[in-house]
Amino acid sequence: MTRPKVVRGHRGQPSLVAPLSEASASSIVVERHRHWGVVAIAMAAVFWSTSGFFVRLITVDLMTLLFWRGIFSGTALFMVFFLLKEPRRTSEIHKLSWSTIGVMVASALAMICGISALRFTTVAEVMVIYATTPFVTAAVAWLLIGERPSRSTILASLVALCGVGVMLIDAQWGNSMIGRVLALGPPFMMALMTTILRRSPNAAMLPAVAGSAWLCSAFSLPFAMPLTISPLNLGLCAVFGVVQNAAGLAFYTLGSRQVPAAEATLIASLEVPLTPFWVWLAFGETASPSTLIGGAMVLSALVGHILIGKGRFATPTVLR
Image (cartoon, rainbow, N blue to C red; front, top):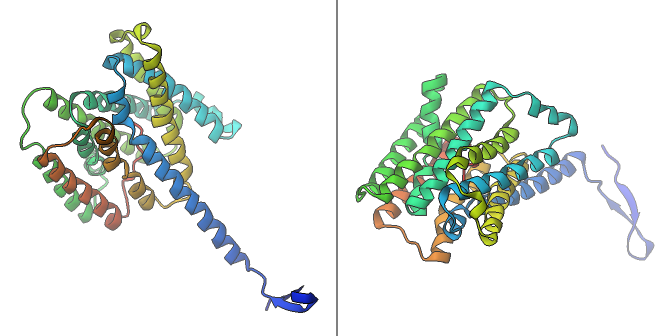
């Protein structure tokens, strides 16, 4: 038994104080790290949720927006990579595997489709469709690598699919429908990214995502007019790329190291309701009743899947 430590108390009288055990001290440190991890992931969700706000605020054409946002985002993400990784790990950049290239291309296409969708339809509709990503991932992983989803995942997927169907009840062909079709791109691209990473867990994720931002700029350049942008819009594109994407991913990377996957995914899902909230607050953009009902169904399925299914398909958000 550990001997109590004798210390001098009031008026120099000796008193016995039980020393703090190593296990207790360790649990306090772990809980403190978890607390800051939760804060970091919540900050990531807040940063990610500003995507719709910036797309509405920046008045430059879509391709020019994608070009400059990719330039600033990719540069900032590479800086984050060098700050978070040890110098010896920077050799990952020179070891580009087919898996890393696949993640890079899928992430770039997800960015293009996601931001384009925000230009053609309401932010709420885009986020409702994007919230189905874990369920699309379950289906793609089953088809490509034979990873069978659990019953809870299948049930939640059916509820989410019904929610998207409800949202499309009043759909008409036009800009809104084009936006909804484009919004299907990010869930499928993110599902492909996650499946690749599950098959090749050693793929360099952060350099791939950083490279995908530059690849997005390369895709957009032939259709963009980068030299015609105003200083104000250029500054907004810089903030869009650095704060919304790079800072969000940096906070999520730091926080997810301290928090269980299911809890991290649940906290990050705050992005889904926050994104349309900021746009409503700043621009008065509202969603249709069918979108609200369908969104509630999808969000309920998402939260239920995370709580019951333990967040099996946790996916960081990197596309907006």
